[in-house]
Image (cartoon, rainbow, N blue to C red; front, side):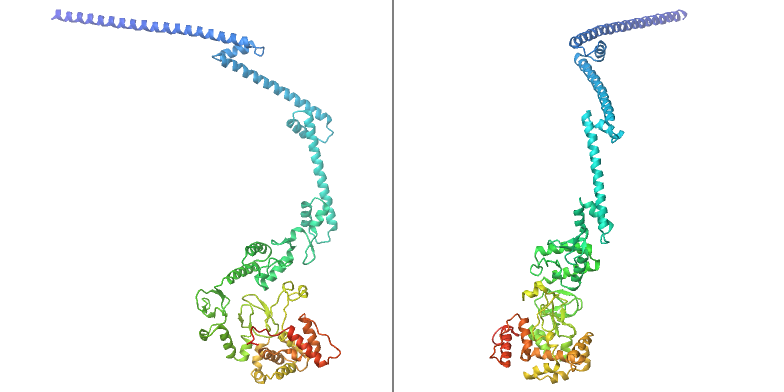
Amino acid sequence: MKIEHAENNCLQIVIRRCLSWLCCTKRDSDNTATRNEVVNTASSRRISFSQSLETKQMIYEQLCEVNDGRWSHEDIQEAVSSCSDYTSAFHYLSRELSVCSDQTQSSQSLETKQMIYEQLCEVNDGSWSHEDIQEAVSSCSDYTSAFHYLSRERSDDQTQSSQLQETKQIYEQLCKMNKGSWSQENIEEAVSSCQDYNSALQYLTHECPLCCDQYPYSKIVNMTHCNCSFCEQCFVRHFSSVIKEKSIIHVVCPICKKPELEKNRNSEESMEFFNLLDTQIHHYLDKATHDLFQRKLRDRALMEMPEFSWCSHCPFGVLHEGDTLKMECPTCNKSTCFSCKQQWEDIHETMSCENFKLWKQQNQELDEFLSINGIECPSCKFQFELLKGGCLHFKCTQCQCEFCGACKAQFQQGQDCNFSKECQGQGFHAHHTRDCFYYLRDWSIRRLQQLLQKNGIQYENDLRKLSVNSLQGILKKDTQKKKVEDKAENTEDSGDKNFAEKELLVQLINANFLDPVDLYTEEEMIIELQRGKSSVPDHNRNDSKESYLEKLKMKIKQDIPLFVYTDQSEA
């Protein structure tokens, strides 16, 4: 057993030594390979370095050949060490040269500017500040341009100073001339807007053609559709009055009366005029007046629609689209005739509008007819529930037509009236017929009765129907003034009852188509011919007074007919 154990130990020792030898052999082999690799790398590096030195030497020699003296030996060495080829080294040296050149030029520019600054300081007489000289030197490249720069600045300053002085003088002159009609703001506005005294004075003295006062231009309103202009006060006064008291077609220029809205109701010109005028009215007039103007514009647009009509019971209108004459108002739930504008009654379904109006007149009491249905618009045929008496000038609330409540003659401005040339110089007027109450109210009751009696008209029963109470319902408050005038003319025509009796007598005269010329005196006939622009016949020596009066009467009836008939049957 011992021998086997010893043999095993010897075998293990041999194995260990063999393994150790093998490991040492492997390490030596590895170390030898590593040493060979290091030697090879070092050798390649020596070869590469040698080649790099040769390349740099060649680049250096090439740069030295092309050097014209601009590059130093150190610059070339720096370029060769910093660059890997000839081209990059050449560009490196060129860039360095450019930088040096820029630095040189910058240094020279600073020296030049310093020299220019010193020269300008030498010629400065105190009019240029230190900052002005520095600004001129930095803005200009030479002495001459810098000098002109400073001279121009001084010239501009002098010009500005001169302008300020002139402006001050204009302001002082205007203040001396001011008599309280210009405010300080007006004068300052004129001075700032004008270049000389005359133009500033003209700016402040625009004369308004309506009130003939003078206003600054800022207080003048220019109309949009004409060349007319007037002051703000006249603009407010005129358009406020027209909007509140007249129809929308009268809202035109107060000087030239343009545009002609009556002729061009639906034209684009009138629509454009109202749009521009609305802006001016909104600016100058109060809100209530502007709202009223817009409401009238709306009503005008509605009235141009053929299916629109006003209700005869309330102030609202209705768009009537049916084929019947009966028009129902949704506001008051009452009916109106769409054609004659009369309040609807069931009997109207069986008769025309003309027969219906005659039926109403014949079936009402005289006092009720006079007090309720006595005034009818000649334009739109709307019937007013107004009291007669007093002023005869009426204005239709529906179509804005202004007319005489007795003879229905329409009122017009003088320039719109074509009756005669003399009308152009008149204001708002109408040409009444000679049987109008406008003229016959100056007659005495006895003379009016005489005209009725001469033509066989009985009037006593009609007068007897009028009680004192009904007379008081017809009359207005201003009858007292008329009573005084009647008393001064004829003492028997005094009191409210006599004035109302005159009105009734004239109604009977008109209803029976009587011509008052039958009772005219010679003087009244001549006045009637002159008023009608008709020639007055000569009074021959052989003519008696009665024959001459008859000649005047026939002349009036021939040239100024009172009644115009449509056909011979009516005549």
